[in-house]
Amino acid sequence: MSTKNTTSEFEYYVIDAKFNKTFPTVCPHADSEHTEDYIFINHGKFIDNPEMMRFVFADPVPRKPVIGDYFSETESVVSEKIRQVIERFHIKGIQLIP
Image (cartoon, rainbow, N blue to C red; front, side):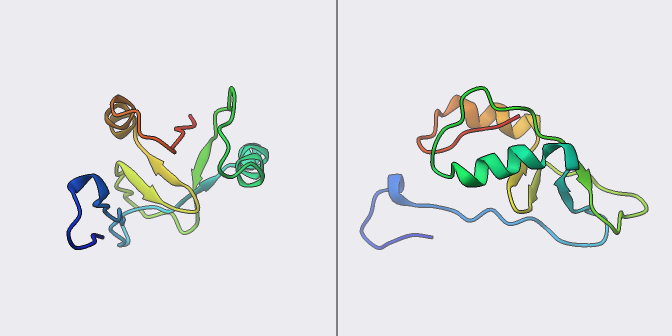
């Protein structure tokens, strides 16, 4: 996503997950729904000391699931590997919640 005559500082990219029958869909575990609700209610505000969210595979679970580094569900869910890279950049406007 880019606008003509801009610097790379203003170029953005859309992350999209590959969808096929081997990549599972994830959703918040029932015990994490309160955290998900809290995030939704406080959208745009940083959360002090957020609780860890748990995610589970949604049905149907593939026979041999392939676990990727990115899931594009209601929330963007990334692996530890991606979290480490993102945190190094101190990106304005995002908060990584465990």
